Image 1 (cartoon, rainbow, N blue to C red):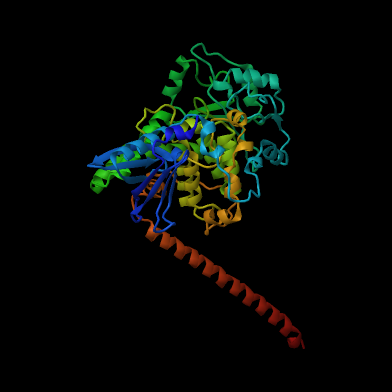
Image 2 (spheres, rainbow, N blue to C red):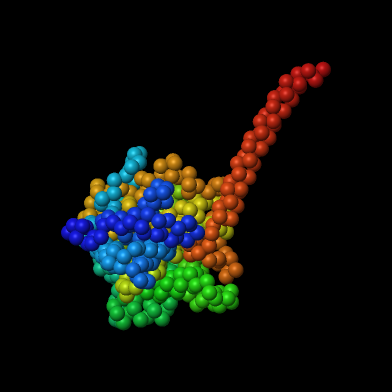
Length: 549
């Protein structure tokens, strides 16, 4: 298919662009296969480059011969284009609708993007399973790297290499896989260096109404327990939801078959509920006509903060079992690709200071989201403005980032990265020139040859000049476990995402620059103090022989 077939009117002059908190711009609108571009002839800096994949929905309005297109974006921006001529407006609108809803992954911009920067470090080669396993080997010899899924036939949503207990052979893994939803048998997620406890993740067991069991599955998770120790199974579903799953062939671990494990049920909502919550939240944030009481009521009715609280509470529980109770943990929900990953990755941020660095956080996203099979392509197909009926869309990754921001806000000196880093990841998960978040699982990315045909997001982010924008000036390495508060008064609305297009950030930007200036000045003073102390020590050394009788 040629993109030109979908572009009825490639260029229109005299288009007026309206954007939040920015001056109105008049210029030439151009449509390409992947972008809407508006260029002002008066000032070349006033350009708009908007990826079609970033467009969630559009609305058309007409007044006489003037047409208006309201473009609602997946990053929650809303922009307005005033286009002279009804026919031109209709043509532009239909072209945008067609180009922003293409289903073929291979037609997306990352396959056509050519970086203008030199790729110093290939992001596709970073954070490989072999590298993570080498780190594990330096701490324990109780695990091995299995190639049982090398052709993705045992579990289509797992990577080809998986870390499993050393004493469990591949035949047992295959049998355990047949007992778990989607073949997602228990695999290592995190090893706690402090006490040797582990966190594993999986999908629900297929016990069904007959109470089916699998000896290999029982042996697999028992292999992670130390002698005389108990473990915890954290099921991210309520007991009622888990019981309903049994009728559909799913279920949960029976106490009689897993006597060394205590099962705890939590209440993290399913995908469709989360998507509805995001839509209500964004609607509330964009509605500025209500009184404060009414606005707060709509905000509460969205239940977004409740979801944040439940996810953080569950992650804290997993971390507490591992660090304070000295117990290993298995986390799963239904499929093991959404709430499970939210909990395992947040627990690691609480427990492991390495995950609070930029490199460590990138590795966490690769390991616990991309390689672990979170279906980014499906979940991020629509955002909060889409008019289409939700299929598999859900803001699971955005909720995870929101939870990280809550912890970052409570521990502002413990993270190497700033809020801007989290916002950047949100934007690229929904629409990007990079191939990192394309596809739903490793098997798809291998088939699409993303590592050969697209550029990795990490290749761009890890360049020194880009990294500087994402560094937290308050960062001081903290090797301790950090315990975030989940009390309602401790959890705030993430204004940096949900209100950034509704209010000016000028005051916040000025305050941030002032903070950076104070920190730099403090460093200068500290250096002077250290220099003066060295001089004083040197003078005292020189004077001491003179004072000797």
